[in-house]
Image (cartoon, rainbow, N blue to C red; front, top):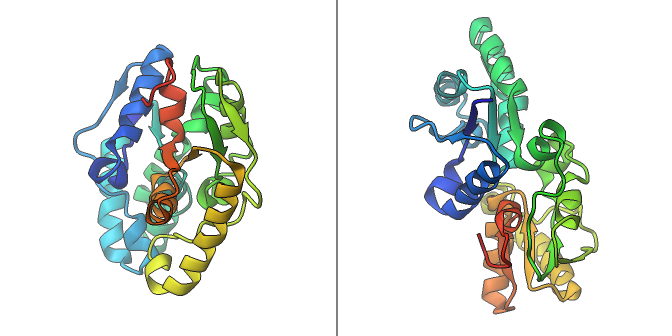
Length: 246
C-alpha cells in the first residue's frame, strides 16, 4: 500500500511534530510513508471564507498531488472533512465534472489518522506507552463531519500506563472554528472558557485531540492562564513508546 502523508498547513507551518509523529507511528506499524513535496493548502480556508474561484485551483492541485497514492492519511479531521465534503461539490458547482470525479476518487482514499488505524488497518493497540494523566477533546469536524465516534478513545485506552480521564461536555465546541474565532471573538472566548474550565477540572496534565487547530486554541488559553496543562496531538501520544513526547 502506497501511503501518503497529507501534512496540512498547520502542521507544516506551526505543528510539525504532529506530522512527524504520524509518520513515525505508521512506519512502526510497517508502512512506508511518502510526503509528497508538491502538497499545499487543501483550500478549506478559502472555501469557508467565500473565495471559491481560488479554492478550485487548490482542489485541482490537491487532486493532482495525491491521486497516485493508495491511501492518504492526515493528522486532521478538519482537513479530511474538507477533502470529503467540499472538494467534489465545489468542482461540480463549477461545472467541472471531470475534476469532481477525480476529487471523489481521492476523497474515498483519504483518512483521518484514527480512522485509518482502526477502520483500514484494524489496529487499536499501536504499542504506545504514555504514563500520564490525559483528557481527550473530540474536535467538531472529526465528530460531526467524519463521525469518527469513539475511535480516538479506543486508541487511547489501549495506551499502556495512561490515566485517561473523561472530559465533561466533551462534545461541545472549543470555540475556534477557523475564522469564527476572529469574526465572533467574544463568543469564541466564552466557549473557550467553558472548555478550559472542564479541562482543568479533570486534573489532567495533558489535553489531546486530533486537530492541531483546536489544540492551538485551547493551548493558547491554557498558556495565558499559566495552568501548567500541555496540549499534545493524538499522534504524538500514539507514537510514544517510552513515555516521552514523540
